[in-house]
Image (tube, rainbow, N blue to C red; front, side, top):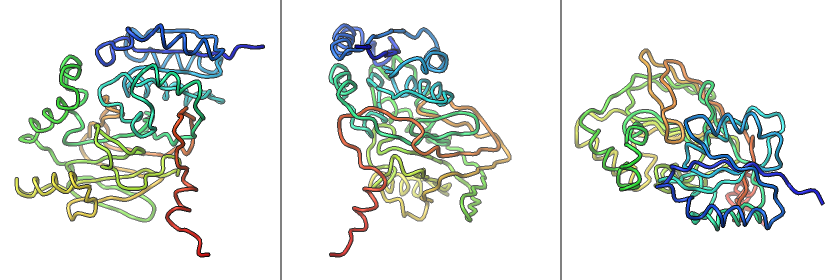
Amino acid sequence: MRLKKMLFIYNPQAGKGKIKSSLSDIVETFVRADYEVTIYSTKERDDARNLASEKGADYDIVVCSGGDGTLNEVTSGLMGCPNPPVIGYLPAGTTNDFASSMEIPKNMVKAAEAVVSGEPFAYDIGSLNDRYFTYVAGFGVFTNVSYETPQTTKNLFGRAAYILGGIMSLPTVKSYHVRVEYDDTVIEDELIYGMVTNANSVGGFKGITGKDVGLDDGEFEVTLIKQPKNIVELQHIVNALLIRDLEDKFIYSFHASSLDITCEEEISWTIDGEFGGAYTKMHLQNHQRALSYLTTNEQITSEQLIEMQNPEEE
């Protein structure tokens, strides 16, 4: 019997290096499931992307362990493969938003068990110009916090580091005069924040992207926040986000399969929690069901979601 070939890429630094105590159990789980495992440990940025791009097509499955940044690299590398293999993910980062959306266990050994017993779910991948993202691309207030917060601080304080960093950044809130085009709609306004997502959880907060999010429906959930005139309006916006009121007067919220954003000055973006470049012209595209990820918890497909929202009359 031919053993299935697995490429296992892990980031030894993610999440206080917590994979080190579980690595033997993880590999044993894969081997018991009749996988021939090739293991690579990343040493620097883009290692996971390059490995996935150069070697991924030679394997039946690519499994990665690390934070959302490591997952982004593997995803980006495999998007260039004509017949990409299925992907398994063992979350080891600080917030692990993708794992939350896909209901992947946070315990790494249990996540490995989910890989060998799970079923593939075809998931939408996004792109911002020439960069791919797994679940979120954003700009403005709060978005620079994750990549400007030192890794040691993330490891010590976890989600609190993001929140604290966001609060500290409020005195220097910057707005951008942008033009946003999607479908037959044009928005032109002063914005302090923009978020283009395919996820149920962002920054460790569930439900902030709206209700009944379809992870395979070919559409992004887009949230844009207008510039407040004073601290009272800013507090109003924060409260609206906390109660998930995306219909607030300061918030644009809509679905789109693609959108174009232009601004006279460069806008810095984060992609899956890492710095994603600065641009004046931005095209964001949803690549529907481009890659498949393994999960043991059955995900609701976009077709099932439509049926639940529009039940047939008996």
